[in-house]
Amino acid sequence: MAGAGFAAVAAGGAALAYLTDAGQNRAGAASTTLTIPELLEGTTSDGTTTFTLEAKTGTSEVLSGVTSTTAGYNQSFLGPTMKWTSGDTVLLNITNSLDADTTVHFHGAHIPPKMDGGPQNAFAAGETWSPTFTVKDEAKTLWYHPHALGTTAEQVTRGLAGMIIVEDDSDASAALPSTYGTDDIPIILQCLAADSSGDVKYDLTGYLSGGLSYPLLCNGTNVDATTLAFTATKSRTRFRLLNASPSDIITVQRGDGGTLTQIATDQGYLTEAAEVESIRLVAGARAEFVMDLSDAVTLQAVVTTGWVRGGSGTYDFLTVTPDASDTPDALPSSLNTITRYDTTDFAARTITLGQSGASMLINGSAGTTMAAMAMISTTLDAEEIWTVTNSTQLEHSFHLHDVPFQLISINGEEPTGVDLGWFDTYEVVGGGTIKIAMQFTDFADDTYMYMLHCHLLQHEDEGMMASLMVTES
Ligand code: C2O
Ligand code: CU
Image: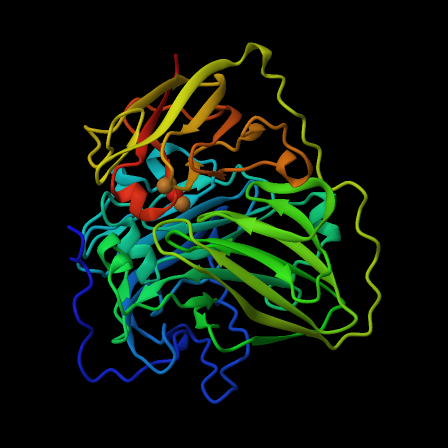
C-alpha cells in the first residue's frame, strides 16, 4: 500500500503559500514571519459544536524554492487548530478527499474507542466520517493525524497533522495566556526527509537512499536557513510544542542559555511551573512553556535521530521580540494536583518492543493487520503497571491511546521534575525500560479497540503496534 494515495497534483497549480487556501495567506509579507495555523471555527447548536475537516492534497514548499506534493486538512499542508472545551460535546464531519483510505486519530484524547480514529475507523476516499463525543479531557494540548494500517508514516509526513487545544475553567487556565495567536502560540515542529525534486520521503528506503535532505519545518515553514520572527504584544507568551516528526527527537532550548518555564507535559499541567534548560520531545509528544520577555529571545531546535539517519543539527527556528509594556502577574504557585499512583495493588503486565528482520514487534507479533497484532485485554476501571522493555538497539517512542499514564521508573531510576507529570508518549531508549501506571476509566467496548504503538511512524507501519480491548468485565 505504501506509495499509493498521493497522485500527482493537477498540473498548472502555482506554488502556493501553504496556508493560502485556508484564508491565512501572508503572501507579500516577509516569508520569515511565523505562520500561525488558522483557528477552525466550529458551529454550536443544541450543545454540540461541529467542526468540518477535509483531508486533501496540495502543493507546498517543504524545501525552499521547490514545490512539493503535500497533504493537509482544509489546506495544502498541516491543518487548522481546533479548540475543544472540557465538558462540551463535539461532532466532526471529516471528508476524505485523498485517493486512499485514511482515519483521523485524536492523539491523547480520552474518548470512546469507536471515536478514537484508530485503524478500525478507516474510511475510504470520497467518504465522510462523523465521530461525536463529550470532551472529558482537562486543559492540554492534543493533536490529530491519520492512523490507517500501513499508511500512517506516509500520510503524516505528507502534512496531515493539526493541533487541538483543550480549554477548561481551572484557576491555572484562567491565569495563563490563552489568546490564540497573540499570547498562546502553537509550534508544530517536523523533521522530514525530501529529495531534491521536493518529493517528501516517508519510507525506510527513502530515508536510507542518498541525495536526501532532512528539512526542519516550524508550522509548515522550512527553517533550515531561516529564523522565523514573532512579535509578542504581551510580556508573557505561552508556547505549545508538538513534535509531529515521523521519527526524530527534537529538543527545544533558548539560544542564550536561559531557562524555559515549562507548565505542561503531554497530558496537561504540571503541579507547578518548572524552570528547565530544555524540553526534549520524542515523535508525537507535546509540552507547553511560557516566557516572560524583556528582550528578544531566539529559540533553538536540536534534532537528533530517532530512527536510521545519522547526524544531528541545531536550528535557530524562531526569534520572539517583545513589543509590550504590561507587567505579568506572578504565575500561580500551584497549577494542578497530581496524585501519584500507589501501584502496590496494580495488575502487572509486560510489553516488549522487539524486532525481527524488517518486522517491528510488540510482544512478539508484528501488528501489520488487526488479526496479526498482539491484543491486550483489560476491564473497565482496571489499574495496571506496565513494564515496557525495548529489546532492540533502536530508539522508540511508546504511545498509549485512551488514558494518560504516570512514569513509575525510567531505566531503573525514579522520575523527577517534569517526568512527574502526565504522559501519553514517552521515550524508550535502545535496551531501555520504562514502567508506567494507568487506570482504564469510562469507556468499554467489545468491538472497537484502542492502540498502543511506537510513534516512530515507520516502526508503527512495520508492525510495532498492538491493540487494547477494554471490556465491562
Ligand atoms: Cu499519535 Cu496511535 O497515535
Ligand atoms: Cu520505534
